[in-house]
Length: 484
Image (cartoon, rainbow, N blue to C red; front, side):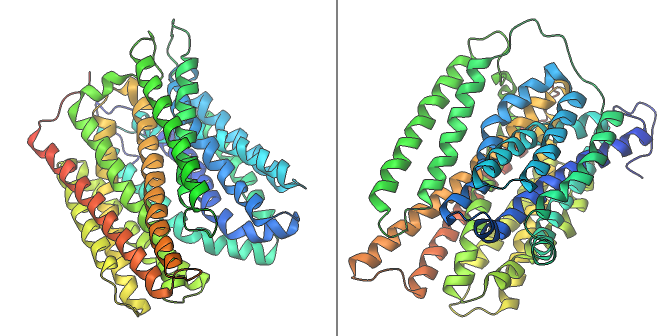
């Protein structure tokens, strides 16, 4: 049955309006994913064109990530006051205008400022995109649309570097941002005409303190992870460790202050009572642990491919292609199955396969051929694709519809926090191996040592996803709770 067919008793929107809303959300999602995958390819050319250092150009990428992560919780809460249509359309408009500003920037400082604006617009959209799907589509189709969304993200991730390389070669770095402008204009028109307004009257003032504490906590987490990634750089070890410890302390204190404040304000930024539903809480923990494993693998494997095996950057990107391909092949079917069968069971099976795939990558021989890497990466992608959409469905369907924005924000926070924690763990492992190499009188790790460090990191990723599998499987003993 079509995603746009109507049945008696369906929640959400009629089929025609449903199609337009889906196109708006998916266009915006594609823009955000492309932006995240293309920018890393473009940094060397941006650095050269704007006559800035490589270290400064890295902040072109980091500024977007920081702005997004720091405001996810705030925008998830604001959606109930502003309404999905107003917030999503405004965020999309800001993202589109900031993209134009990025393309017109003639200094790295202005470009970084525009990237911060892009991040704010992206957070306004991404924090509520899954919630819009739940509002627009009936429950019987929720798994299918989330599976289709997973396919879109995976396909965009795979195509992004290729598209970015083509635009850079043919037109210049400005076009990686200009491509967002026509897409953004179309998506703004679609979203304003098709996404329903969900604003509800709220008497209590907005939780400004909670927004500030959450922003400080998430920003400190991102900076701690970024600092951990510098542990392995020559001469950075001691300073980077102290800096990471300071950021981690700030994150811990800000997080504690945030949780304490949420229990006291009449209209909290993140209502903690949504975690009273055990299946929602377990799905959130499952997502967190799984993204730790994914975060480690995504950062570690390029080191293995290039430093351990000697592949070029382009070849390394090509070796990643089977991973998103596996998601594309599996995620739509997983989404359909989740509408008819237990999402917890499907998630657990997918995570088990994902764990096996990571273990296979950790067992790669010292001189692996491309085909040997590819089929193992494909197993990872198929496992992750079979896990993600059922688990997301479980999170969204175990809260009341009026709390969908909050649940969507939690989903985005778990993904961001998990990936950052994975990067921090990898940075720590690389630092330990680098310190060992220096102690032996070497300037840097050898290819063999690099390979050993990455394999250890992959085994840590296996442990993280095995934990996620165990948490996911624990849901099978619990009956589904109807959201209040």
